[in-house]
Image 1 (cartoon, rainbow, N blue to C red):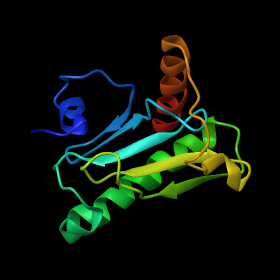
Image 2 (tube, one colour):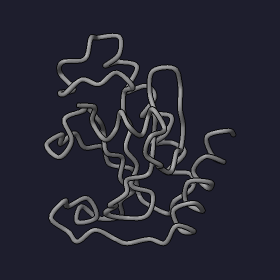
Image 3 (spheres, rainbow, N blue to C red):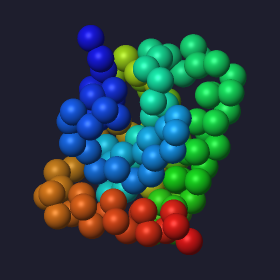
Image 4 (tube, rainbow, N blue to C red):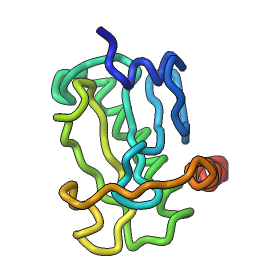
Length: 132
């Protein structure tokens, strides 16, 4: 059965898309810790990051670097943290989280609820910084 990320990649499930290339996609996390919390996902459905072939692995981090720079340019923060957890969805992915303190990226924190409009505005803001 395809993962939820594969369904998003195939546009079977909606998501707030930030960036997309031939091999990767970046979307806003539907259950964010903070505004701008983004997931970077290889389009190839592979359970663990370490199971990606080296080219896809390195490409994923290069793609994440570009998205991270756009997040940092558009969301007020001290830096963008990067996390690989991978327990919630059996499809390799990276969390990019704008932070001001280490507590901002604590996955035990309650998730923030945003309106559709807030998600859309955040996606547009980050996407606009990707194009610069």
